[in-house]
Image 1 (cartoon, rainbow, N blue to C red):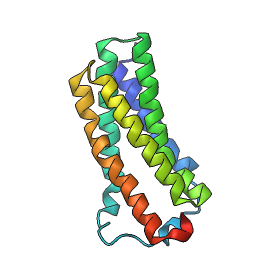
Image 2 (cartoon, one colour):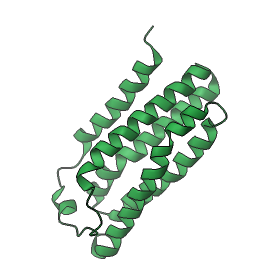
Image 3 (tube, one colour):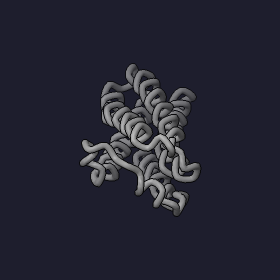
Image 4 (tube, one colour):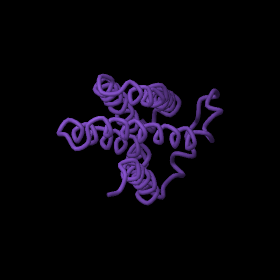
Length: 157
């Protein structure tokens, strides 16, 4: 039997990598947008999200290990998966529709789902909940940044 951490890691990695194949080619639109002056960390964003997804996968593995195969565990795995898909969908959806508002909506949904997931896993594993804190900290930063982009580029909202 394949260890759960390998399965969870492989699913996380596949979704992350899969996003590169579904990202629309029209990144010129996003590249030409005005950025806030304080957005000096933009080159680090892929690294930051990679760390966050690793923490999320580790969190999911701790939850799975507490009660493998139970209905509640499967529901929580579905929530982890939904959170990753919503997070990964931010760039492709925003580019496809050339709409910063789409990104802001997906970011806001991700923040809410992240909070709900964290509160749901807290009674199961404090460590699993703690591993979701990077998402809870960073996701609102991304959503706020998108709102700032809307203010600087209202024609692209």
